[in-house]
Length: 94
Image 1 (cartoon, rainbow, N blue to C red):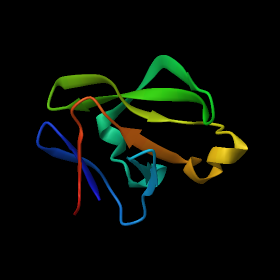
Image 2: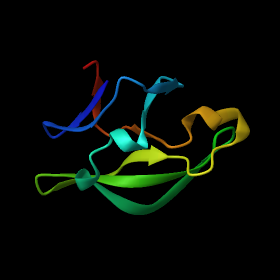
Image 3: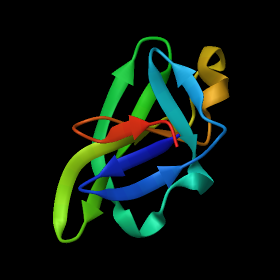
Image 4: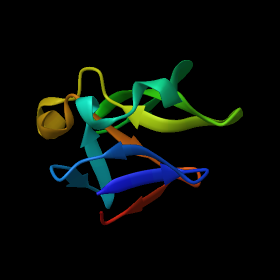
């Protein structure tokens, strides 16, 4: 799978985890140069508290377009160390 935003591949992996229709990419598969920390947080009733990254490509920012669970609940343990995308990031088969 590939995650693409603004014409640039920002993550690529053949080992994603699908939860609720979202592909979660292993943290080591994202291109760090395109990610900046965000203070945004949200809570999922069964996965836990999500943290976010802004996605930056060619001088454009997609705020809070990537999320991850630093300490997911036991029920969502399979997504520990993984990152998912939304807000116009295309996730497609490689």
